[in-house]
Length: 538
Image 1 (cartoon, rainbow, N blue to C red):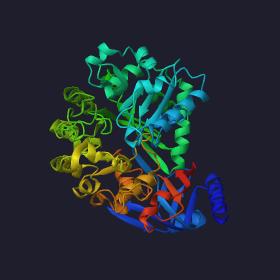
Image 2: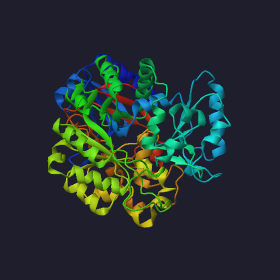
Image 3: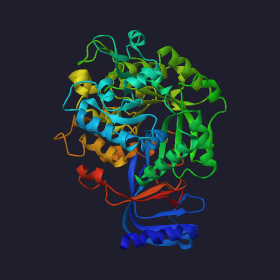
């Protein structure tokens, strides 16, 4: 009750006072490469800025005794998908289901509960988790559940989808089309099984019913609320289209974005130059656009990641290009010409090599534009060193390792996995790592990410000792990747990312000290308050 009263009091001060002096706290902030610990935070609720701890400010401010509260700068997710998360809240949820039978039961229940839906749409299935079958499912599994409407279910990584026969028919995907497309999985008779990989998914997406603008706005607002509640004050939205760009601008002008969105324009847009021509966007430091998301390959779980050598457990493939190297280079030149940052998805070791080849060109100007490799998941040691030499940022997601550890080594073998999810090696090489979650592929709780980064374990403390524990970061390193490094990766380190004087008062109050507790407990941290620009939003 005492804590609740304290924060109700603090909220009342934020509505009437210009300066608040938050005393008797334990605040952590990454400054000048070190973790700084302080006991006071002073900020102006009108300007939203952090003020110096001076006699003048203390005299003018309203003092609040925070009774030992733990304060962190607002955490930053450097790679997520905001609209997709919000829309996904009304779709069938298939994450973390351990059998095909239970997955099918969940789909059937969702279909029965939503009889007016013209399509049955869902996300999150993962055949690697299923204990009652091997390999991908097929359309016949779905045909037995739903006969009168199309079904389309995205895999957990978003790089494969599972369709029933009705959906394949509507998309025009038949035996003849499948014969010429390796990304349409076929049975022994050459018939499409219903599993589509990466670019093949576009055929379904072209016939899917599109959400209305009202649906999208509702989805954004649901996402903003839940992200803030998790302690995220800034999110890098990885790949937005024209509609989302327009909606974000509208919401920002209306002061309807409570957190900060650093958005990446969708680099697959056919008229990319027209998208870049208006230049950078910055509306009130709540909606910022100065980067473009592109992709060279797919994901490891669906054999789409581009590898130098064949997969260890599927030796007839080395993955596939989502965007050819030539197409990628052409787009990159346009991005650089307009002064935008390039954020390129690369998961396989060959995908990473080829992206680094491009970003290392002198004309790419990586040092100034701060280009990023999104995921940097499976890498050769020599490519890690090239990241550092060419000032390329590694945008990585710690929970990918703990989600993938049950299949990653099977996919690529013991030798190549040594360069997989290699946070410590990359960090020690002097590369800037910006951490995120890739939600809704993973859960966006940043304390899950911090926990995975320092333990290399899931939230059930498995495996004992951690999966390739030599690649674990310490809590100080991991904290930087979710704060000041992520801010740097968005060209925003002069405004957010720590609690330095003159920056925005973006901070959170949590229930335990993540720097002193047993690291196995970090994931259980609860966010009590979230503040952006000196105003409480959660």
